[in-house]
Length: 178
Image 1 (cartoon, one colour):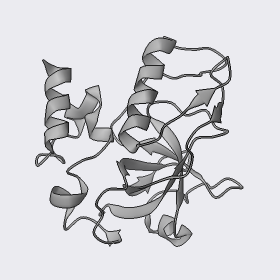
Image 2: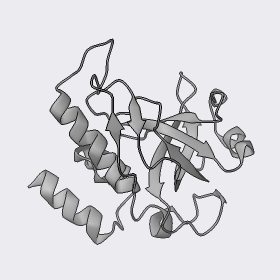
Image 3: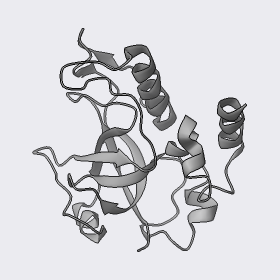
């Protein structure tokens, strides 16, 4: 099954994101139907909870407990910085984002959902999608050259897809694997 490119906006205000998931609103809700698996679950605001492809980070919240919060926050900050989302403030317990530059434009590459009806996706800042829809024919050039998800410490899990990675990805890979 091919990956599909879906444009939209990222949303974290009023939510509890962490380094491996965040909310996304597709510009065209019909694009969600292209994904395999369960139908995408949308909340009242039309936001889907994304699960980042090949990434697992510490949780900023988990059953009212924190995993090592300093590391969980670093993972979240790294994700948000990569997507161009700035100005995040949370409540004291890190259970909800209270202020942020919300609605940042971006796009995802996804092909299926998980058992919780979340699209499993690579996430990108808004900087270069060339066309909408089926992405399998041009993944190795424009679209997958700068995946935010590919910059994490676990980037080796998706390295086969990002062989033609940008200098940013290469520098980050050197930093993490040195």
